Amino acid sequence: MAEDEMDLDQLLAKARQTRPDLPDDLAVRIVTDAETVRLDRLKPESSSRRSVWMRMLDGIGGWQSMGGLVAASAAGVWIGWSAPDFLPDPAAIIYPQENSFVVADLGLDALFLEDAE
Image (cartoon, rainbow, N blue to C red; front, side):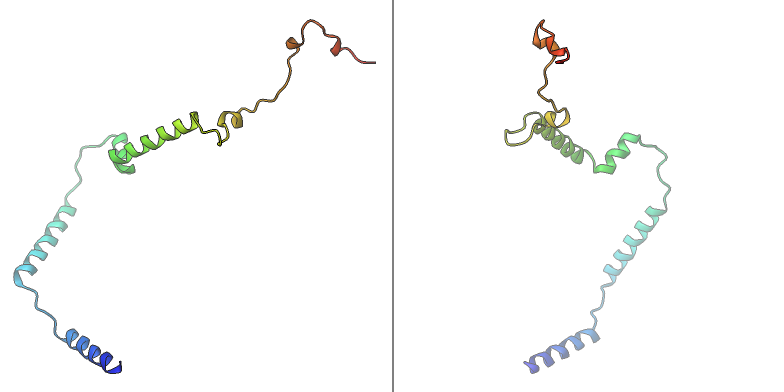
């Protein structure tokens, strides 16, 4: 095991000492591409102003993301309106209704309103 590690260390040391030469045409292409990118970044931004809505749309990821948000919102509304039986009714949570009676439901007899004494 130690001999294998020694051979590997020697091979790695030799590989570190001998570096492959970079072809001249590749070096020229790399430098040319870097200079093109640098010059593109120095150009002033276009003077055309984009609307607030288009900037917001770009901020969330474009039309594809907007489509996903619309689909998720529609699914949420649908689940909210037609919830399964095992889920609580959201309308009952927001507007709780108690079983209370109204005086009009009792008829014309109003003796219950008099003091019992």
